[in-house]
Image 1: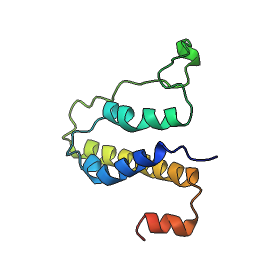
Image 2: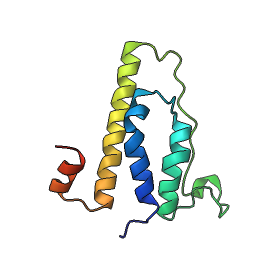
Image 3: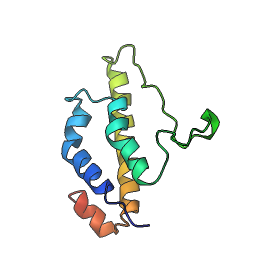
Image 4: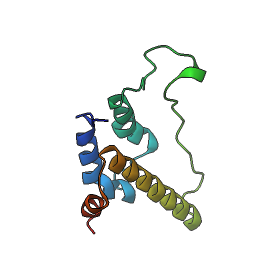
Length: 114
């Protein structure tokens, strides 16, 4: 599968700002992530992100979820859990991008700075 041209700028923008997103400096939340990256990524792959076809809820190609609300994220164990979830999600995204671009193990090491 050829990579749509619109995906490369998304990857570059996310990579450039990744550390700020992970540190939370930008107060970046799930809704913003979906709007800035996830929806355009799926749209580039041909998904009907906004349900322009008018399917019922059960047959939509993309379901939008409400952001997760934490009552007290200041607790250390909750922060640690969130950090682990972010790391796991980030690793999953990296793997998908590597597969999408059909990178070799050597190329992956270069991208990861190893």
